[in-house]
Length: 164
Image 1 (tube, one colour):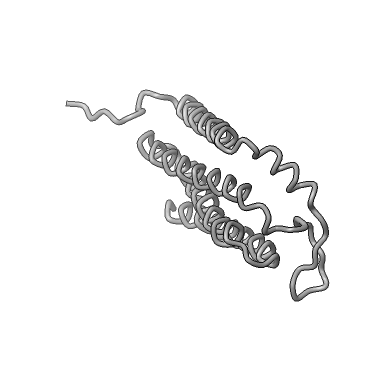
Image 2 (image 1 turned 45 degrees about the vertical axis):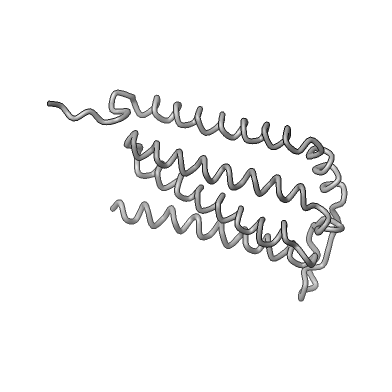
């Protein structure tokens, strides 16, 4: 009796095309649902970007872009949180499919990197932006995004290292 593996009959290119279609389609559906549910999201985005100004980073003499009143965008931050947490969940599903389809380790490592980034960023959004009490948390959030990006790269590197 032969052992049949899920996706064994698909070429690598077909597997990647399938996963790309699932991924991109899921992202587009997520964006559409968020924009439909939050009907004023477009106006909030426009208001957010037109309110950008240079603001001093606390404890430094450096000024970086920030909304003039970063605490005023709760609904926008919630929409971005919903997007990032959903993309993180989509990445988990893609990783499961990559394992089932026996994708190359590099692709699995890339997906793990994406999971760390999207879920880590969603944590930062809910922690620093949605529950923002002081404007300085805007810059703490961005420092956290830099940290999460580094952690995501490390996660990918450890997966690739473990493969050797």
